[in-house]
Length: 473
Image (cartoon, rainbow, N blue to C red):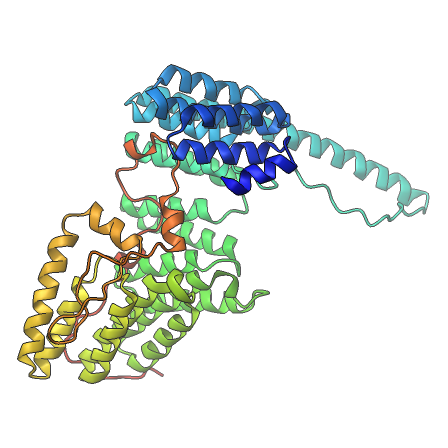
């Protein structure tokens, strides 16, 4: 607040600072001050910025007194500006109707938004094609007179609608809405229109492929996964990883290996060697390691686990995936009979303290290791800690939130083992990002996980029965 006010003292007409201060007041429950800041942003901001202020005022009306009519009016005022191209406003309005159980009205909002957007796209496409025909005619005339067009180094014009276009989110939101409240056909239609509207985007065909998997359309899913990988090229690892995870779920491990190899190879030739998406590449190598483990190539699996660890973000941001990788390595070493090494990896995984799904499974693995080492007292304490954590994890949201906030366990039991402690909480950067709110009514419709939050659950670890190492030629 202090810095924002200092900024406004220097730049009193900066609409972004007014808006940010309004957000701060709204989060603190100071609704009157928030409204004053938003209105100041409206007064000073350019025309294109006003839909954002109107959307913020709709959030404020909802939080202040649940005035749904006021919410709709503010959102509609924002959508009346700039030809209704404020994608965030359309999504907010559709979510508002959905949160109130008005499914027909929410669908009408999506259809109205998409229809308007596609009409504007068509007009711009016609203008480009008309300009292209004129340029072609002009170049033909110039070539006939043996005169070259002047070269001034100008770059080809970029369609302003496509540059930084956020409307992809409207298509995704619509498709998720239809998947939840409509049918396979209506969700399929939403994805189809979105994929046509954004012919270079890989995320839409990827989500479309996962819809096909959900409805058992396996061959259609494979085609769409391939389209997503082709569009992603060397820019992103997720399409390759998700395609491979699908094949692994079908027990097609050799095919999954080929897809993962292609993904790693494609990213390695990118301008940054794939390091621009270190976390995504780390997950790809983790999945590949599990695939090799299923195929029996333990040496290659260990190498890939090592690659995955090296690519995780340093510090708190990489704690979750590091904990998971170290747990998987511990299972692998336990299956090989390398109990001391397995125990070491268990300790490292617990130190990260952000195991996806909870730490109880790590303690259970440690109990198995202790049993194999004939350490009865350690096995008993590990089982006790696993039971305590499992009970907490089964309660759901409260414990999940504590783990997101980076709850650290530092108190020590009689054996010197780390045990849970309700004190000493550390807020991580990723936790802050996850806690940022969307629309205030969003929680009423987000009762199922979205995106790729539980990606690790789709990668099934092999059984940890004794294994025999093999190396494929």
